[in-house]
Length: 225
Image (cartoon, rainbow, N blue to C red; front, side):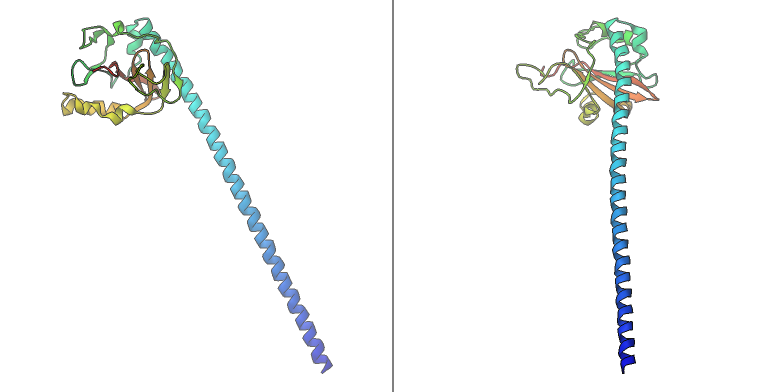
């Protein structure tokens, strides 16, 4: 009887030891899983921060490249330099000038700026009112048209990576035919940066075949019927 009791006690102790060992292993495994989860979370945060930093650097670089192009573009207008200005447009698409000689918007395709004449008053391109054209754009929210004491809610030259022209679909309100509208729609879809200089006009730029180009210039004055 004593031997049976002794054996029972030994079996019980061994069972307890096994259970404690399994619990220890389970706790160790749980701790390892927590550590691994935290490590993965930290890695994800690091990757996210690295990606955010890289994106900001890339955006800053792209903006710098655009501003370099914009200096050339605005200098061509200021100096009335036909050759330099023509180099600022895409050779395949050309670019478009938007004006409103009447109730409907008029969209004119241009390949050589020296041949452009405004429908409003037969004015050449470089005779238009490009006041403060040398102002470099600041990348922030574009000014809003308010038509109160001033046309815009702020003054200056501003740029943003948005495409309000494509959203407007203004060609649908012109007298253009379908064949004329198609290339306009295509080029409008390629707009990367919109610039509003509140002292003159609105400009739309595209990055095509690894270089910047002017795509549209809207010379209409907001708030004028």
